[in-house]
Image (tube, rainbow, N blue to C red; front, side):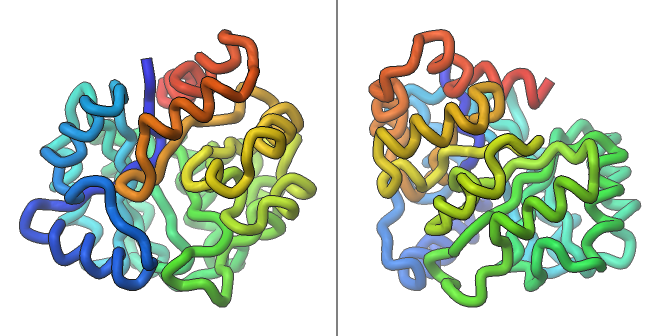
Amino acid sequence: MVIDFHTHCFPDPLAGKAISELERCCGIKAVHDGTLDGLKSYMERCGVDKSVILPVATKPSQVKTINDWALANSCESLCFFGAVHPDDEDFTGTIKNLKEKGFKGVKLHPDYQHFFADEKRMFPLYEALRDAGLIVVFHSGMDIGYPVPIHCTPQMIKNVVLSVRGLKAVAAHMGAHALWRDAEELLTGLPVYLDTSYSQYALGKEDMVRMIRKQGIERILFATDSPWTKADEEIKMITELGLPQADIDKILYGNALSLLG
């Protein structure tokens, strides 16, 4: 079994434009068309059984529309997280609604949503998410399309998880894209999950294994950042790390099952 904990797709009328713009600003080519059907076909080809889809609201007015779309399209193989925005005046109501509707978590992208991860204004939002028992996936580190300033560094993630005890936090991209040395120094050993999305291409086998062991196998989640990497290649790299099969199984699906409940 394989659970991809970090994927993206868009409603059909928006997918083409969204993918084209992301390809342009990031300088990379998508591996599928960004639609729901495109993601499902890609999962079947690559051997992925379940995808966690992480939509991001770039302004508060998008929150309800995104969450209605996510709820309508959730199924056994597609686990949609919900959208929240830090400038939503009723974020507590949004979080309550997400919890009541059965969403498992949310994605926050500090670059796209224009906040620094450890800003004081963010802590009431984090506390509300913690109190609701929702998972928070942070885009962490550099975003290829918006390289500076970096809105979520390993130090910021550390400040958040040490201040909001009990928050179910996931630092994407093995703790921080392009800031992996800082992530290894500052985040390993802390109560935060690391997902493997868009990281193996740079870290390689030795660095991946070292970070996994330092963090603890139970807090590593397989992820691809689909449609930006090929899941079958990412799965192969995980299986070739030389770890015991029981640990490989935890990374590929076991830890995700436990976290998602």
